[in-house]
Length: 604
Image (tube, rainbow, N blue to C red; front, side):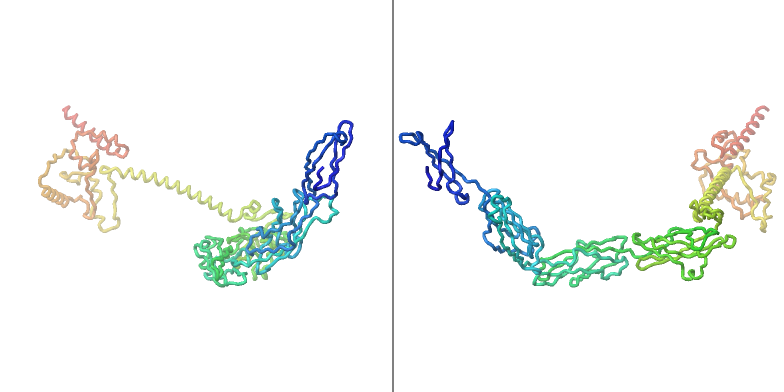
């Protein structure tokens, strides 16, 4: 048996069926960390080991298994690390390691930071691959605030073996010192963001607020401010580059933009590349432009049996200014009414409502039916505005429980929600409807009359209306209009223009000399009119026109009819409609008369 490294005893144990040997350790406290494997040469002999017996040998490999009998140990008791102050939270600051002679899970180490002054700034975790302790930044560093941190770190086994607890604590402790390195940092604003308010009527150049940034480095460089032009394209604001005060550059309009979001840039003077930004929100407040007013035209009633101090009506106010949220109204009677009014007063409830309170009892409708109570309403805007409204109170008879019994027409409709304004609106609507109906009927009648008159006036030449004009003038006897109706006065050689002539006129021949014929025609007409006593006065108006030019039917006048043969048939006038009914009748009778005369002559 080879016992070069360790003495091993081998013995044979007799058994009914076999022969076996047991390998036992010869020395206690074997240490795997000193020697992990052993090779043992075993020899077996028969015949009880007597001379002449046969023998055989074999090699046995023995490996010691690990137990957690060794604590972790730091390679040194003091670790010195350095970290820039600009390191981000969560970044690794440095690494430390405690060695454990065990293997596997027995060598797993847990690191913890002992609570102390510097321990709160850092945290430590274990790298599972190499069992290193990684120190992580837990909070932001500031070289100007603190330049170094010192703390202790414990390294202990994660899995303890109870058999070896008597050996003592399975952990080790080391001291870690971390120096913070100074880094040139950008300026730091004293607030993460800014909110400013400005009224929309604020004049240009008014300061609305300020921002402040500092260089926290040891150099303490001056800081310059500017507005990011992308956040203020219309240049509504400007900033003092040294003081950081923000002012308006022009009048702001809340109706256009109610909120401005601008970005302020702070730059170090000795290092322009180092900049920081902060958001500034500017709220444009609505100027108090409108005074408050009563929410509605309140009209209420007071019972004749009302008691002193009784609230007979609750009312509220409204304001056109925005926003409506946050508006606060106060109600009070006018100063002069406060002393002189012995009937009613105003009680402000403090919740934007008020009530009408009676100051006496014994109201009588027969003595005074209506009371008017003024009320002053004031808002909390800037600047505050106020107005005076009037409440109408009608005295009514009521039951003992306060229900309305008898009152005027207006108060009767109050329970159903109809006020004076509503009643007036209803009456106006009824009146407007009546006026529209009357106008419609009148227009229809007028239209019918115009149609009849126009149909009569369209009958030309053969229907003549004579009116005696100029009554009371000096020339009323210059011409007797009755002669127009006396056919005896008219000379036989003159042609009448109001009826169709009975005799056939000579045919018209074309004239070669137009001007001479026209002159002769005019001379003849002048001579005839000078000799005619039945002619109208000189100041009368006579109109001559050739009618029907360009028409398919041509002229229908009696003058033009002289050139037409007497035997012409005028029955086609009946087809022209009701406007030519009179002409059709006149010419139809003449045609019948001529036909009768012709037939009589033929008979003779």
